[in-house]
View 1 (cartoon, rainbow, N blue to C red):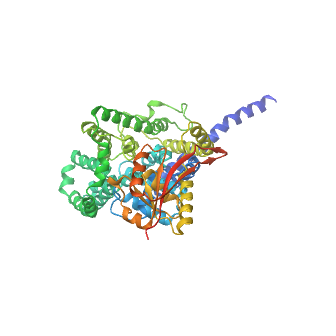
View 2 (tube, rainbow, N blue to C red):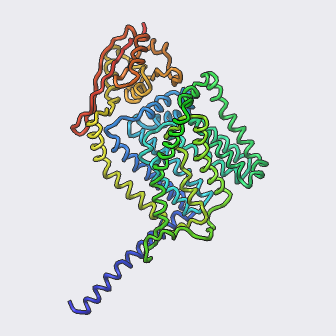
View 3 (cartoon, rainbow, N blue to C red):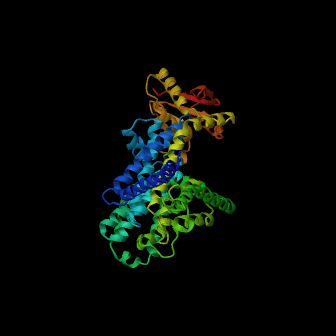
Length: 540
């Protein structure tokens, strides 16, 4: 090669990165324009949320292919078969949502995972609407992209139950509150009251969000103007009216949900402190991917910069003009109160703080951080967040089948049962139909064994739970005796003695058999499960 060719080759080599850099800059500009333009931003976010929900539904189906659904999900399905004003442990909305969903979708594991991801997807979109009231659209999109990395909104959100339903409902309370605080009209107050009622009808834990919103309003510098408006007073009236039917049910049921909630109270102070520490440790560990990604994407530099990462670059000494101060103060207050007050209250009143109670408590965290005026968000930051989400999602999707196989092999080797509830339900349905030629009507057991029968049996028998202090009320013992029932006692359940005692008292003349089942997956056999089964014929 002569000297001229050499110089041309070096010039071409130098030109290629610049060409790639220009292409990358155009990509950044295109994404930035799409998320910042009022005409396209909503569609871009909706598309992202839809792709996220579909992708993680597929991932969950692959990851959980060797497992049956968690009993919380089958319990929600059982509740949804009858639209009651409450279901023993919890108020009714999570059951109603499941009931509507499974009237439109087939009763399969895939539909259940799709319900979970649709719930989190709805929550993501509402969080974007919240963010748009506080920050510019670039920061709003970045907050949602980061929130999609929060495990609650992907693999940790596999289990649809009342806790996960709050991820969809509690953001509505915040959105309605910000709207009411800004507009201060009776109509805005009506929506706030209805949103608060929806939260309480999902789970009473929503009182923490309602309390946080109320405290945020009282602490806000503009509180006087808000309290002089009709909004808060209309909200209270609407909340009371919407809650009235459920309160009547609560009275008729002798406040059964509070009996259930009482199982987490009256513990030692030392145990409540340990539980609070576990709560913080668990939930901050879940937030770690979001916080790490936030620092990384804020530190990114665009093409052409000599340094791709420059840590101080996202912190500026002069405040930016992006965030709106009044709603930002509300968001900061709500998130701080949600983190501090329930945990401190649990310690003071010696309550066991479950880690799952944190599921709906941290969805404002990315927005609260991005609303800080001294945080600088470059054009490349949303692209970096999208790229991070894409790499993680595609990577987990590719690894999901092997992860499922490895998990099954490891669990089987340790002797941990992948409970074969679906296979048991099919077998018991066949046994019942062979004997009586009618659909199986009632399954009697603890909730962990009864509600999977409701979901997986083609007859969908109603569950009669042995936790009688807070049973769902879907059927009664008298109805079970008239229609006949199958009682199920799992030998691995530590409450086996209680189950057997109930059967001896209420199913004395039943046909008693022992049923074994095990799950097979990719040629591997899981541990064998054993159940004592009591078949009580219909009364004549």
